[in-house]
Structures are given as C-alpha cells and as structure tokens.
Image (cartoon, rainbow, N blue to C red; front, top):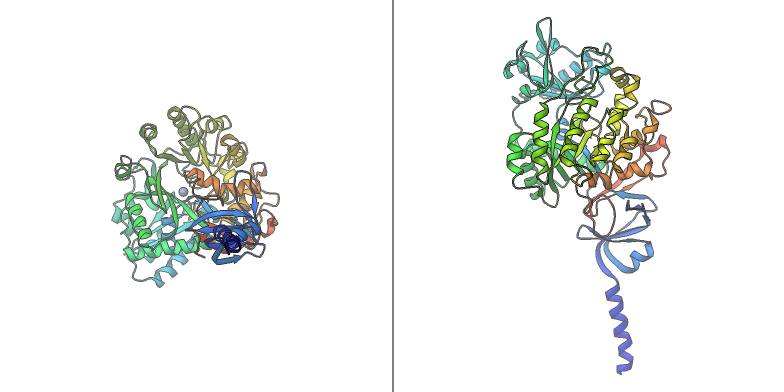
Length: 541
Ligand SMILES: [Zn+2]
C-alpha cells in the first residue's frame, strides 16, 4: 500500500510546486526586454504588479498559471515609454485652452480665440497656447490690437509654443499692472512706438500669469485625467514633470492615493523659495507612483523667441545675444546647496553661453565623475569646446528630438551654418555621457513618442521633411532610441531599478504595438498604434 501511494504523492507535490499562480501571463510576443544586452523574449509572468519571470513560451507556460492570459499573436512588446522631459500638469491645462498650435497667421490665431470664447462664455479668463510667429508671413511678434477690440473687458493671455513668451490683451496687462517702459530682470516687455504690444518674454510673462485664478479641484482632476488618458493611448507610463510647485505635488499625491490618477510621475520642483524650503530639508519624497527628487532651474529662454543666451550675437539680430534669466551667482549658490543634498539639479539651457555657464558651475561642484545625475535640459546649442564638460562631470544631456525637427526650419537663421552644426547634436552628447534620456517637452511638442522616434532615427518631421534628414550625423540608432525612451529615461530619474526594462522584479509597465519599432519602415513609424498599455500589470489602455 505504502509503496503505491508514495510516488503518486510525490508527483502531486512536484506539480503543485512547479506551477505557480500569477495574475497575468503574456505569451507569443516579441518582447524587447531592454536589459543590458537588449535580449528578446517570448513570454512573461506578472504578479502583484511586478514581473516574476521572462522567458520562452514553454518556460513560462510550464512554470506558471494565470487568471488572465494574453496571446500577443507575435506582436512586439516594449517597456512602457518614459518621457524624460515634459510638463504633465501644463499639458492637462493646455487641453482646456484655445489650441493655437499650427496657426499659419496671427489672424488665424485670433479667429480661433474668438471661436473658443463664443463656446465658453462663462470663463473669466481666455487662455491659449501654441502660437509661433516663425510660421507666419513676416515672422514678426504679434500686436494685441485685435484682442483689445474683441475683448475690452475680459483678460486674454496666449502663450507662445515654447512657453517662453506670451501675448496679453490690455485688460490682462492692466490687471497685472504692466506699463510701457517698465524693466524686468530676465525678461522683456515689448513696446512699439511707445505703446505696449502685449508681448511679454520670459520672466515678464510671470507678471500676467500671477493674476490667473487657480482652478477648482474638479477642473484640476479633469485636466490630469484627460492628460493621462492621452498619454496611455500613446504608450507613455511614466512622465517626468519638469517644474512643479509643492501645491501641485501635494494635489497629485492626494489624487494618486484616492485612486483618481494612475500615471507614474517623476517631479522636478520649480526653483522657487517655497518649494525648496518644503522639500530640501526633509529630502526626496517617494511613493509607489510619485518620486520628487529633482529641482528645475532655468538658465535662459528659447531660441525661437531669441531668449536663448548665446556666446555671440544672433545671426538674424546682430545687436542681440539673448540673456541669462538670473544672475550667475544664483545658479552657483543653488548648485552649492544642492550638491550637499540628494536632490538632482536639472537646468534648462538652450544657448551655448547658458550651457557653458551651467556646465562650468556643475563641474565646479561635482568635481569629476560622479553619480549625482545632474542634468542639462535641452542642451541645444553647445560650443565645440564645451562638449567634454558633460563627460568630465557625468552631466546628463536630456534632449527632445522633435525640437530639432520643429526648429530646423529657422534655427539656421538664428544661429548661422557654423553654430547650427553643434546644435541638436544628440550623437555627440550620447558619446560624452554614454547614455542619453529622451523626451518631448510636451505641450511644447506633441506627446507622441513615435514622433520622437522618427525625429531621432530619421531626423525628419511628420511631413517627411527634409528628404535626406536634418544633420543626420547626429541621429540615433533604433536601439539607442528605445533605450532613451525607456531605461535611460528611468536612469535619469533614479528609477532604473524599478522601471524602464522588462526584467524579473521590475514593475510590469509595458505596451503592445501593432508594428515593431526595431523593424518598421521609416515611412510607417507614425502609423504605429499602441494596441494596449499596461501599468503595474493592469491594462490602462
Ligand atoms: Zn520644458
């Protein structure tokens, strides 16, 4: 009797130990794990939001059983995309404002504002975003006359595509107390024939923004949920928000805890006294979905509005080189303070002069190779002699490939041929640091990671311009691109142990695509669709 029973019992024990129950099995996929050697796998098992195993179909199906099984039917799976530089809250807000992106004239912008105002008669302020005078005949900044006529009693503020300039009507200027002839550090108030034009550049924009009433909680939730929905549909599972104040951080934290917001966020705090006081002493803040460890600083403005700080004058404005937004001593003392903390300094620098200033300060406090992961956001125009400053102090160049293909139409006018060669130099920057995180800077650009992919690999825009690509010597390979939008973006946020690749123990943030980015023809990149997005093992799109 015993002789017969024993083997049966043993067999049962082996079976029950060897098939483990998990929540989800994905099989028959081409899984790009984006591990250190870019391994491909066929299947993976997920439990409690984390990956428990990755392997062949046989291995996974032999070892695990799951309540939910997804047959990927041979389609590609990548880690969820991480946008290394964006403005999540700003994007959400922009979705509920006048959309001025793509306007081909100031008249067209005014018509859109008029239509929006008619549809939203109850709004106390009319806000818009996305105009770009570089797209218009004459390429000159607009003047607010039409806005004053249409809206004598309602304040209107329209932000330029890059967020570094805006045009306000007279009502808004009056509420903010802006007058012709006033000066402002790190900004300019445009005047024509002694009269305000309504255009405010860089720090001057803050005067009017400070008057805009704060949104209600319902409105705020609406912004963030719509932003999240759009991001999940594009395969984005983590967003780096480059510059929030502590009130936003607290609101986001509360919404995530209430289950009203799922998106994973890495946050850079804006360089404002209240924020630093709140967090610097207590150290980085971390929950399952939120990580606050960066400080966002602005060295200069943007190239399009000639706010970028250059070493030599603009090629299309010989008396002007742009300006730094704060005194050099501000950046130096902030770097000294942050170097003694666990916070990461992340500085927006576009012009070659701004980049040099910040790189020198970083090098002064970082003193050679290190793991502080301080970043330069944009790193757009670099003097040939300064590239080594990234490598010397392990400074991360955080770049946005679609800026190159958006700016290429006029960047040569601003910079001239010589300087343009060292602009948007992603490959050269990658060589310096060894890895490079990629983002979009949305809502400055579209949220689409596929546009980023196209811009960096082929160096063309959505219209397939230019035919041979823009400065293709600085393009990135497909593998570098995938890494830049996943594991390198995670690393730039100190999150590479949790997200950015599909490996055992990591969060199950992944996407199923209808086309394989490693294989798809360049002309088909923008036709790639995200069939499903999973965040922590849960389908969110
Ligand atoms: Zn930005």
